[in-house]
Length: 329
Image (cartoon, rainbow, N blue to C red; front, side, top):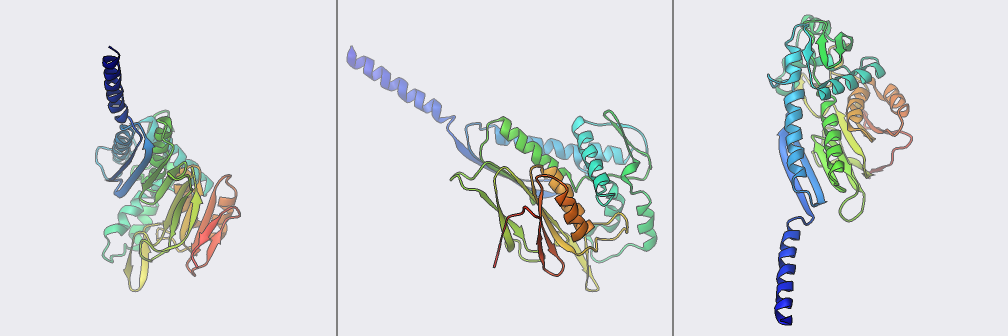
């Protein structure tokens, strides 16, 4: 009788082990193309096998809301509304409100109504055709974040030809939402990379900090000027080297100045922002390129828990007062 009891106990232990094994901690890694960029998500040591699936579903949902190039998205519907009110989700309204906040903070250097110029320059696929001064001036006349009017969950564009492009802030916002989802599900170690918008949760599996490299402008993708050691932070970089075309030895890049209608001509080639919110870092990285080193650094120093690394067109590296960058010799 005792032998049979021991045998049954061992069997129960084996079954228990097999079931527990299904919920053992695992690492998950996925990549996909969202928002016209490569998205990479890595989650370490979680028992929740559905958290990665839910992260990818969230990316799809946000793309369907925020994309300017998907005809059925909320932003596309707004852009085609010709001044009429459009009912939008709370998340889209929240993102537009955040964008307006940073437009005000930067005195219009950051402006999500930049879409008419984005369409005109078409930097990504441009083979060297420059728009005429007349077309640039016409596009500029429809660019002003003050044309956006919000009433509850309804939004309208007071100028019928104004259009919104959330490209300068959406990836940061989405990265923040992915982080929130992971934390709510108990994730303690993860890295989110939305085309250069990086968010890290906790530390690496071995307990050490994450080392995030800062890209050297116009160099090979794996060539860096240095790195920052972080945990529970976001690191967002933007620069004139990311998307551009050349004509007559001049570089025309994707960071367009709403005041001039042309690509930014400030003294900065690249900006990296380190902070708590990826949406804020996203907006700031673009804004600082447009503002230049003096005004850009003044803006960074005025915002708590935000640090910056600038690379000037002369190759000089500038750091905010609290930045801790390990530079490459």
